[in-house]
Image (tube, rainbow, N blue to C red; front, side):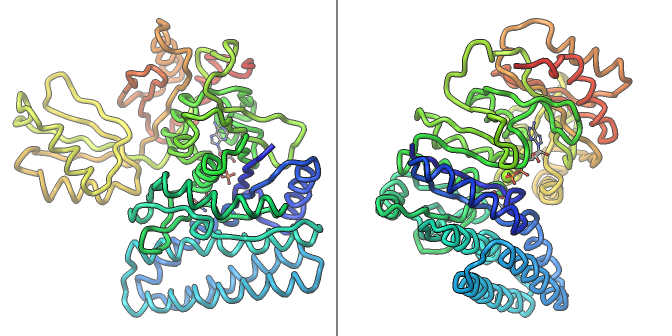
Length: 468
Ligand code: ADP
Ligand code: ASP
Ligand code: MG
């Protein structure tokens, strides 16, 4: 089989884990499979780069040295513990050193300019994955496998120029990726490709958005007509709830593309929202598996899961770090186009609205946005619409969204009643409710402090420990 295997940051954050992954790849390769590896950065690396950029913008130069030293220590430690051959070890250390020097120079440039453009930010972010892939590739060579490392750009992923949220131009990408990767596979090499990264038509590095490595894996898979995509991670698969909230959460054996998209759209941490787009119209299934628990088969995401897996509710999702914005004003009543004006103004600033509800009186509209977008959202509303279209803007920063997801909810009566009676039994106040017309989800907003309690109570009410 031709398998694209993506490894998340949690699977590669120590030398010991990389040795384990290299053995895992070797065992599948030895069985006659063609393997294409896609790797994220070490856990936390992308966040660290974002953090240091913020300090640097405030002219905090000392943070640069600290950051570079810490990053060096992490990667050198990994190299020392996953590559035995002296020659390969020296080469990996050298690549890392060259990358660190370049990153330091760029950060020092940012201090001088006190500005970092979106283009520069994507370039900076790319160092996270670029630091790791050479290490993985040398550790495969160390095991006697033939391997080369490439960036997503070198692999042929062409994107638009929307830095931070780039989308692949799939037709050209197909031709390019095939051109670069097929010959490597013919030579029995294992390509190790950076996740998260592409390049636009001018050759600038772009990133595909947070968790973009999942997306890279599916893009590569359609380009080279892979048989399956395996997303290796640190949990056993997609679960009935975040195991960090519900200890007894169970792994879902089968999930449809539609359900998985719903799960990722709700911002659950484990998949890029667009990661399934490239494979939706193909027969390529996605498996999510635990790299450290091979006895577990994980979750399979496919177009047509078996009938028996069509349970009423599949998963309870909690989305923290969200904020509720209420806009109101007498002038909104009976004024056509008010909502359009609000959403348009926010869309222009790339603010993603996660949930919307309007009171029947039309005098107020509530919206949920990610906290990261809150500042931009409020400034935009104040600057463009206040006193023209709307009168008041109120914000509640301390909310969380809880969503109940599952295809079996479609057309079944009483789901909402069950959800809200369970929540109210636990004295949780529901602030806002929305149901997607697909009926694949029912989402509501609660105060942040009530979030865990709500997830636990729904998990119990729908008896999700008994799925599969
Ligand atoms: P990776 O580094 O492999 O990309 P992520 O950190 O992006 O992994 O996502 C995996 C994490 O997602 C898990 O460690 C788990 O805590 C969290 N998670 C949240 N909700 C769920 C869920 N319903 N099923 C599985 N994992 C979940
Ligand atoms: N390193 C990137 C992130 O943290 C991409 C990924 O992990 O998939 O978002
Ligand atoms: Mg991820």
